[in-house]
Length: 150
Image (cartoon, rainbow, N blue to C red; front, side):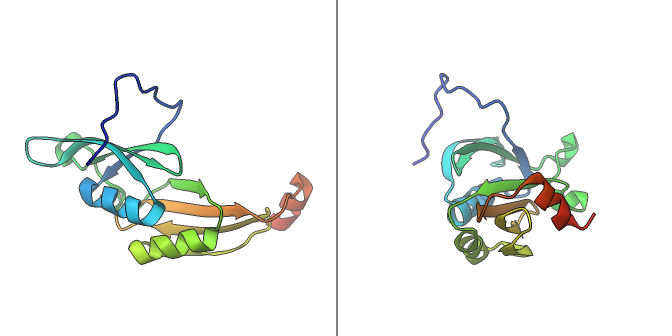
């Protein structure tokens, strides 16, 4: 059963709000892929979700279904996304494997990066990009700049 958010819950200073073609399916995917916890959902008269809230990796993520008549379209209808949601996780490889098993596709395979993280990028079935990373080592700004090749 979905736990309802109380009126006394303080919103975080910043939270992503995703427009999804199939928000109920997205909640199921995010639960399987990223261990999300559903906080609430508010269906409209036609069954589409007007608003929902989940916790992913301890962070609030809000989402709703597409409403084309109001200009609310997900990334697939817009031709892609310009945003990547980043998850710091204990094991980037395991997190990516879990997401792929749930239906994500690999955009950038998990690998060791010059900035000191093990990092990869995934696309969820709804067109949103998610990066997963864990820290391998501390890297100075000078090392990072040298690693860019710029």
